[in-house]
Length: 167
Image 1 (spheres, rainbow, N blue to C red):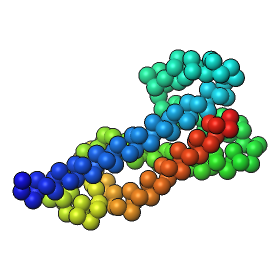
Image 2: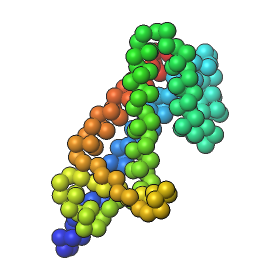
Image 3: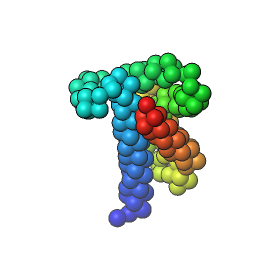
Image 4: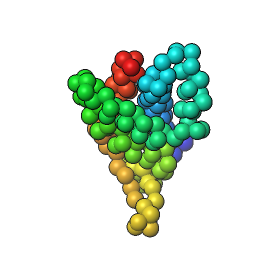
C-alpha cells in the first residue's frame, strides 16, 4: 500500500472514531434527558419505562424537541440554586455540541491533499455544502479543539446524569 493510501485510511479512521465518540455521547445525553423528563412527568416507576418508550421514543419525539422540554423543566426548577447553576452549564453547551455533532454526522471528511496535510498536524477538516454561499466550506477541527469538545461532552453527560438521578 502506498503512502497516500495509508494517509487516506488514517484520516478516515480518525474521523470514524470522532464521529463514533460524538454519537455515543449523544446517546448517553439523550438517555439522561429521557430519564429526567420521565421522572418529572411520571411519579410511578412502573409507568416511566412506558412513558419513555411511548412518548419520548426518538421515532416520535426528535432530540431537539426533547431539549426544549428539558430546558423548560429546568427553567421551572431554577428556584433551586444547584439546578440553576447546572442549567446554565448545560444549556450553554448542548446547542454548541449539537452543531458539532451534526457536522460530524452529515459532513464529509476532506481526504484530498489539503486534508492529508492537515491530518499530519492532528487536524481534521469536514466539508459541508453552504446553502447561502452555494458552495462547499471546510470546517477545521484541530487536535486541541477536539480535546476541548470531548471534555465538554463528558461534562454534559455528567451533569445531565446528575439531574436525572436527582429528579
